[in-house]
Length: 126
Figure 1 (cartoon, rainbow, N blue to C red):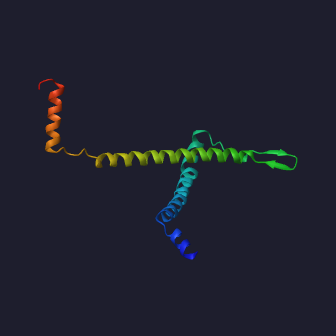
Figure 2: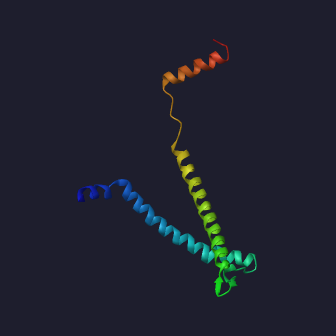
Figure 3: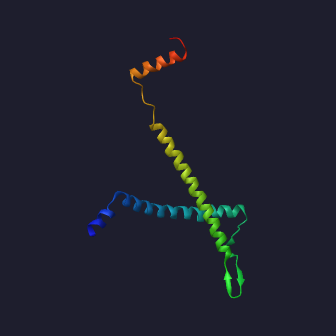
């Protein structure tokens, strides 16, 4: 059983997954800081410092903090949009590099000759 566990834990995809989770957590902290420290204050300036977190409703002795929920939803939308922009930028850079690498293959002499014959047949000169 220990041998099976060792084989399972040492698989390449398990290690890749672990690295992905660690990097994802670190990236989550970066995005959270970006939202909390940069984007939210800028939006606050634009909308006059609206902060929903203080809104509440008292129902008997229970205090329902629905403002925290609204603020969390707004934070989620901002974070999701930030991640969307980052992924869009990443894909744009990645695809640009991929296009540079995918140069069309050069034709062999036989392929060039066949291309000329095809072009002549299309133009009805042969």
